[in-house]
Image 1: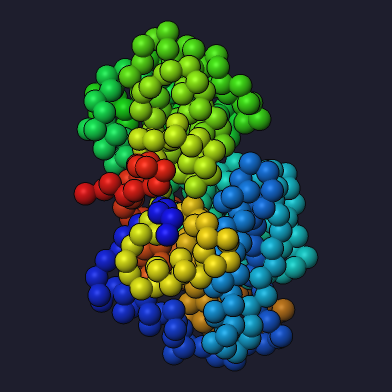
Image 2 (image 1 turned 180 degrees about the horizontal axis):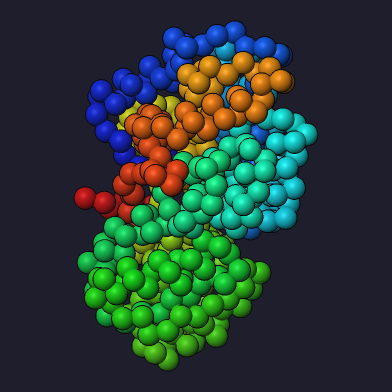
Length: 393
């Protein structure tokens, strides 16, 4: 079984609560709804640089929809999951969001994944008046842009804080450089705002910060510069494809120093592309699939069967949990699903999500903080023998 990101949430009581909610959520509040189906929107980067994140999220959402529909749907109606491929492009994501809100008239939207997409859509939400709930956007501060913006994940500052501490404790680097993608929102945020203070707090000096562009394929100049500075570590603000290419360039030039990467780098693709150059790298994540809880392993077994045995990054289980949290809030909030009540239904959903605390899911409990970002702890991933291992104590 492939080892991959997942956040442990523990107790037998918690597992029982999950089972109850997954099977029975909202039944006490469920009334028969109007119409033929309940529409939920889906924004997923099925192509472009974020393809692995979007494809696995879509599979996970479809799994949740099928499970819920098999048990009677929401208020007696099946879920209709309306999905668009954002192509990991900001303009496409905004266009798709407008379609979902204004033409398809969905009740709420799961996604988008990437922070650049989320940051483009969020300022328009007060006009669209439709909830978005991202399963993997991690740039700090974005949910504060609108009360319709939610993120069922951990921002990269929360993810990276324990990872940086563990990386420094193992490798003891005294001087490092940061290499980051200046065009990707979360990667730039990690390179400029998140990693520097975290490294400093752990006694590490940042000698220099070097940038690149998302579509770059040659990182020889950055790695050559790192060698000339005799660095003892490389911190990356980069998505998995770029991070893997940098690791391979380091191997090519004989720069054998440890790597640490952030939210977008921890997909399975990093190991697949980098190969042996990935060994020893530390990564952050917002979920951990080795959690032994039955509901986690049931999700993973079903997912692997659908995805040729390949496990998802943390956005997969986070997206799965969003669909179940929507079922809970749709039923608990007492929506009618009448076309004339669309605005009031959407507002009821927003109010329910705003107050959601300790809602159990396979990725861990869903609790939104004061700016509607996910709360909780992060796993700490290290690449060991070609697999991600959670080394959190």
